[in-house]
Length: 498
Image 1: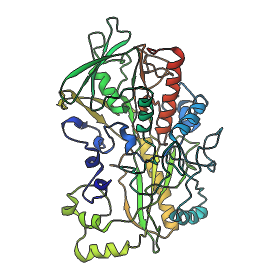
Image 2: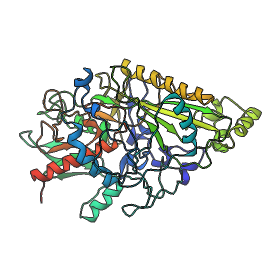
Image 3: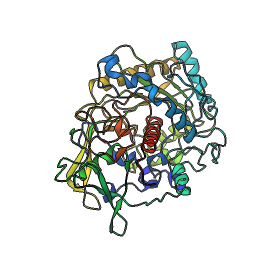
Image 4: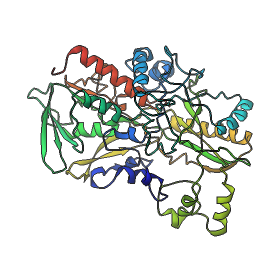
């Protein structure tokens, strides 16, 4: 936590991402900074996620039927409803049923929602004039003590780290698993999967420990849960004479249809204080622009951010820049100095900033892929992942629509716009999806509706990589619901050792 609070620090420093171990390539039109958005540790990237936990809408599963776009999922929203309930309970989601645009629910949330902030009330007045409905945000963060973990203490450092453990992270369930007898081997990346002579099932995972020794772990059932980049990379690295194009890749679709939400953000200044205390997360959104009737623009999830005050040291370190790039070169490239920077610091104290951001719907496209870059290797000599990330006409139109809505709100507030994100080179939300898509036809998908690979009978994938479409919602709750559905299937089919 102390490391994260230093003006010169970044999430990469806190989680030690970078170097030979974490090499990658980015070959698309939009640079994909992979190491900015992942953590390799017990608990994975949930150690630094924001915790926002909405469900996908019904339309997200039916894009081809409703709009003639992309493909339908082989399962529906109704197929996941019981698992959404379980996921909300297991993770501990705070929320309330005040969202008129949300898909139907069957139970209350495990904990009450966080109340709207003071800056939310400022947005509310403007939104009422514009006919925009605001509502609360379901999030895997304890609004009260839950499951042996503290309520949120508002340290305001949710990203990169929650020191009170009020925000859910996957190491919670790792600890529960180990208490039941599971064994965790960390700092041991899997190098490849080996299959049996017939090529019908996986026999072993070969992994390397920090001392450089390779080990071979056999099992009856294997589950990959390493995300939409490292899973296709591992499958492609596990080629063999039987599977020369990589494991589970008879369809040729491993690594195809990568998706992640670009972020459209805007920051402005009011002539009045906008919040008294930072809290590190947002408490209001609107999904009013989600269930669209026309093909374009696509779905939008709009967020009313609780903009934290700027740290004076951070302003000085970055030369007064309006945008935080977590880059020490800001000291040299900042656009204001001296009296101008001092005036900027005084103008923002007390905090007078407000901001909004939106996630646009992203469709699966053949131009977006995760492949192997054989010109670069990691610390074990393996080719690194290459992420090709590109924006299509659907995403661009939706991003422009988001910016129009943001301008309308800021104009209603009579706010001075300080910074707008680039629509051509946006930040990415770290909502990695696609690359091992789900389907019933082995020729057009990698896994079946139970997330079992078509090619290997004992290999399952529980990850955002199985998503057929990406919607505009944060994907983590849906990943958890799918994982619970698959765990239920594995248990019922008795594909386990004991």
